[in-house]
Amino acid sequence: MSVEKRLKREAEENVEEEAVEAKYSRNEPRDRRSRHCPYLDTINRSVLDFDFEKLCSISLSHINAYACLVCGKYFQGRGLKSHAYIHSVQFSHHVFLNLHTLMFYCLPDNYKIIDSSLEDITYVLKPTFTKAQISNLDKQAKLSRAYDGTTYLPGIVGLNNIKANDYANAVLQALSNVPPLRNYFLEEENYRGIQRPPGDIMFLLVQRFGELMRKLWNPRNFKAHVSPHEMLQAVVLCSKKNFQITKQGDGVDFLSWFLNALNSALGGTKKKKRTIVTDVFQGSMRIFTKKLPHPDLPSEEKEALLENEEYQEKKMESPFMYLTLDLPTAPLYKDEKEQLIIPQVPLFSILAKFNGITEKEYKTYKENFLKRFQLTKLPPYLIFCIKRFTKNNFFVEKNPTIVNFPITNVDLREYLADEFQTVHKNTTYDLIANIVHDGKPNEGSYRIHVLHHGTGKWYELQDLQVTDILPQMITLSEAYIQIWKRREDGEQNQDGA
Image 1 (cartoon, helix red, strand yellow):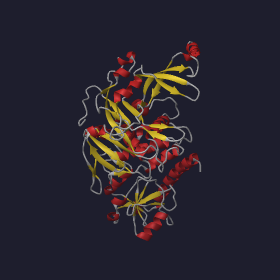
Image 2: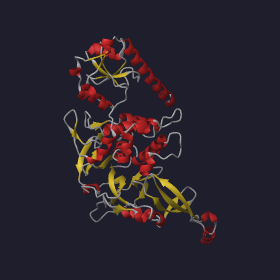
Image 3: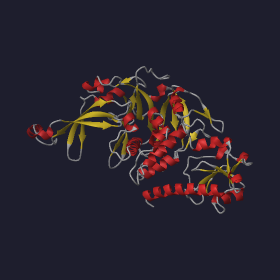
Image 4: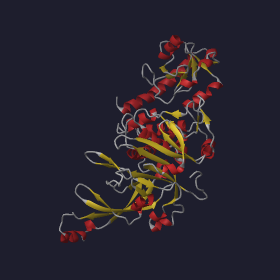
């Protein structure tokens, strides 16, 4: 079945599901439409998990899916021959939740349950946030207690590694800790009304990302971690399987695709519309490009060519979502103890690429160019991607150079073109997220360091593991992707940095 047909069918299923609900409600005697249930004490909250695709465990259908609140499994329907009805009779499991309408029912008696003690279950299935709650997220350091007694900080939550999706987990966790992006997605009203072209599947990314964001920041979760299963299924579908759950991917490739796909989907039917993604991450730069004569040509010919219009330097403005920082080539020699030297480079050395003076040669199949770069607009949140991998037809090579960087107070004013320095009042940045790649190029694993704004403390997250970490330990890692926050007027240094 094509993706368009599948999405159309799911929309029809939801309409059909609501019609079935209405029909049942009309046909039930008034005294049986809702009542208190004697089986509420059989509900087992410790087995409830709403992070997975909402389909029947037997028929694999999305239509009328119900969760059995006693064993946690999903079943279809609640009519006489439905899977949920049969399960109820066979196992004496009586309390069910409709995963679409959020209504509770008792089977096989088939009446609606209304009881305020069940609100915690609907909140876990569909967390919601008020504007007041969202505005307080970064001002509090209150621990939440999961149903099994473990404590967690909302937002600093582990994500399941289903098989080989830690590259995506790290990026999603980093983005979930960018306050304006997070705040936008916590309120579904912000993007529910966006007009989309017919058959557009990319909006699924927006919906799933919003759901994941609300789960990660849920202060009333039953467990201290979240599974990104539905989010990643949307990624596999929307990327046409370029990014998968079962095969390790590249964090920078995923970040680049995800931000552009999200931006495009939020733009709706308008191509160049501003979105929350561009407002938060998009800056701009000048690129100066000069074509070079072929190196094998005689010097007289080279000099003659350099006079031609084609070989004059050209200037263009270009937007960016992230800046790629190039590492110097790692040395191949060993020291006197036969140990490989781990080279180090200061952050400001690799940032020199954007000072408008440093030239870098770029080779294509036929031609060579000299390029230099200069920033013209700094975004509120700046992403650095440190180029660790070199790919050719035969293998991928990793550069292990450690980048020495301060965690706070990085001033980028000198990389702005002169006429734009006066426009930018604030040019100082503090680190808020640091994604690390460990191990071999094609395998390896990802972990992330994030700053919790409420406590001012740093945490390391690797799949389900969450531990606190000292700020000075962060700089010793093979940083791969970093997110920096621009300091606004009156903001002080982060605590703990």
